[in-house]
Length: 344
Image 1 (cartoon, rainbow, N blue to C red):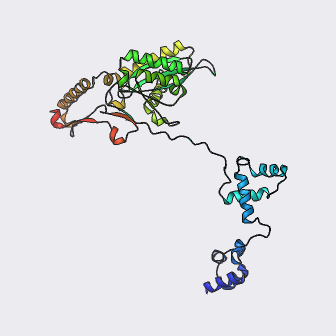
Image 2 (image 1 turned 30 degrees about the vertical axis):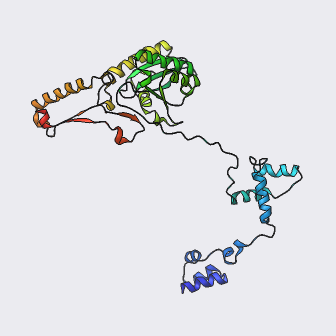
Image 3 (image 1 turned 90 degrees about the horizontal axis):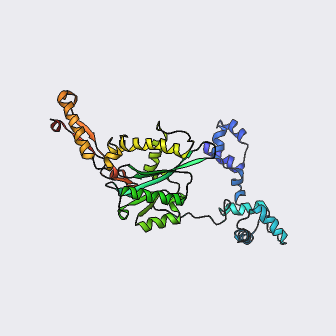
């Protein structure tokens, strides 16, 4: 009965409210099963008598896509055509034609950004890869800033050089790179320097200097901070440290404060990514010495209280390889497991 009623409503276009009261079928059910009237009598497929012909619509579309009007909206196209003595259709008709052809959002030539390859760098010892970046320090009044340049060894996280400057430009960057190289004694031909795409880093003079020195260059992708994570993390450590100040009166004051921080960072900071060893320990190749000293301390503790070492002890070590953008399985650090037999 329900199907018959629905067919009757569809075919005869009866009043749904009356049919619902007479049959006991809810109005919602009848509405769900009854298509709109314009679909019943084919109005959706009927062409309006004043509609543009296919050839006229094509002409309008060609005008909208032409070089003269490609960057104009229909609101500008219509009066311009009228100034030329032409009238093709109304503004709303132009918009309908654009919507039908999925061109209503943007018809201008779009800027195409080049695709940048994801940088991949890795280091298995100190002096293979350096990462560097520049951060801004607040000065004594609003609008006055100083700039901190920091060069970091990727493998050891050791700060091989830093500088505070009143300016951020390519000349200062080049001076900074040369100074770091001269102090470290690293062979430039075996070194890769990684940075983001800031203007001092990508300046022609900086790129030419690195090429002249024989350095390999690596750059982050634009607007992707994760491509230079170690320098970014080091800046976060700096700005949350007790030595860091919200503003500095002079460059000399900034240098005095930051010198204390970098001394602490290199020589006293137990870095979690280095097996809780200091960057200086890893950078200067003293990992084995520190490892044996810690293992002896663990053994001494075991002999005093063996009941507290039921499964042995874990002694973290720095990772064998440090990388940027390699899969996690390829860059995971290792730990030295001191089992019960080892402790004895």
